[in-house]
Length: 99
Image 1 (cartoon, rainbow, N blue to C red):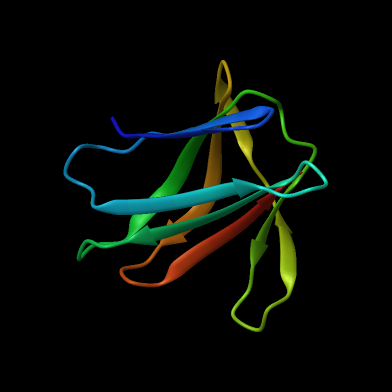
Image 2 (image 1 turned 90 degrees about the vertical axis):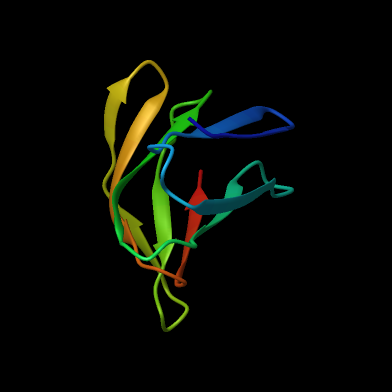
């Protein structure tokens, strides 16, 4: 499994099978929310992104192609693990705002 990096008041992990080629960048905003950009560098789509977050999010939003933020559902699937019903298409970014 791959792991993210430590940020003030948050710890981010993402869990994918070893053959996936994923790049994840994240940062804490001044209001405490997290901004995450995830890129699938492989050839096949990645379904159902799984993240580890130390704090349970109040909401998660995904940026749409037109720049709007759309709230998305998420499912808690373990201690601090959350599954997002999103597909990471090859070479298209997935931009998330977690609050």
